[in-house]
Amino acid sequence: MRWIRWWLTGLIFFMPFQRMIVKSVEVWSRQVSFFINRIEEITVAVLLPLAIRELYKNRGIIDRSHIFLSIPFLAIVVSGFISGAVNGSSLIITSLGIFDYIKYFLFIFVYAAFFSDFSDFRKIFRLILILTVCLVIVAFAQELWALHSRYIAGRCIYDKDNYLLGDSIFNIYRDSFREHWRLGIFRTPSLLRSPNFFGFYSLFILTMYFYLRRRVNLFVLFTLMGGIFVSVARMVYAGFLFLTGVQLFRSRRLFMILFIVPFLVILFYMSTLWDFNIWKLTKQSLTAKVESAKVTPYRKYAREKALEVWREYPFWGVGPGRFGGAVSILFKSPLYEKYNFKPEENYLLRKWKSLDQFWPQVLTETGIFGTASFAVMFLTFFMVFLMLGKRLDDYDLKNLFSGLAVFTVIILLWTFGGNIKNGVIFTYSAFAGIGLGCINNKNKS
Image (cartoon, rainbow, N blue to C red; front, side, top):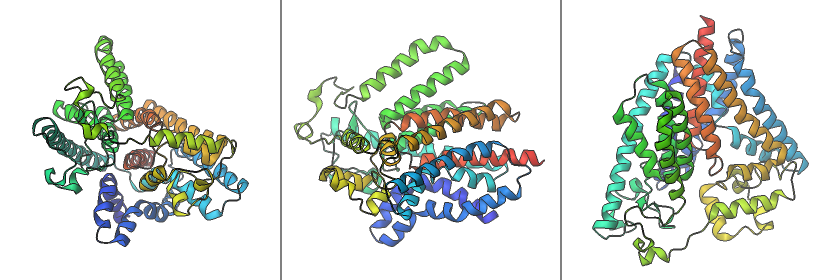
């Protein structure tokens, strides 16, 4: 099984860069880019049956937490198929729709079956930490370039002639100034093609760093915090605010809450004012070209349209894979035409392959019962990881699951402004699975 462990280890490092690699490869081969874009789906489809066989074969040492974690998946699958049957959806669309929601979380069981040594995890996390610090350094270079271009050189960063390292590195989209400047600073994507994802990834690594390292290196700490700041992602800021509160209570330095938390709250509020400029503190800092730029409130429109559809299918929804996700686009769901989904928003839907609104999308596709199943899933993750963090005697495993419990809450905050189909969720699931595998190994010994 060594080759499986090597493959799964490589996947942990690959997944954050998947989108960038897919877009880069797409230029010269659409077939190869299609394979790369589906690599995690192929992996879980092949390895999950093998993982279940391995776990069953070692059922005598399997920790009972595996059973608790599997119950929500069963509920999601059952409610999803009932939803599909009620709406007369084809079995393949329903199956793919359900799979699209839970595919990353299924890796918990895959990694639990094939990893058992915490020393392997230490090596993986050390390399990921170094990689993330390098990503933040690239982000700082992007930020300095963008600020210099805009405020000192007076050049437009959307002009290709001004790119520092080229379009593939800086990923400058021309569709919305609002999406790339907040607080008067550039929302840097680093090498991950999305400032939201870059900030979310930095926040995840920072959370795990707090819990896995006995001593915090200030350079690493402030570098990761810098990555979070320059992403200027509201949901990431909300998660960071929660993490800061947890860390302050853990350290029992309650007096610091009076200074740090209000600052973070103000920062989070300012990030909602997209034209607020910390450099000039005036709206006049925006150029005339930018002021005339059209801003499409895609998330607001998608949320309202999803709720409009849901009101007609309140209990079981329209069926998995029929509205808002990649499966509905692949099979050309007629619901977009039926409910007059605007062409410009339809373009963004096809580009992002998501409503970018997790709960409205789940509610529309699976109804009240399916949404309740997903809520139970997050609650189960939090409770299981929290209990493992309290029950285990091993210092490293105890802190790993405590960190995962905290980040589960952060994921829940993220779902109110994003989707759960990204590399952070994959890495989170991989870490949880490796931790469970290590518990099984201790039970064996």
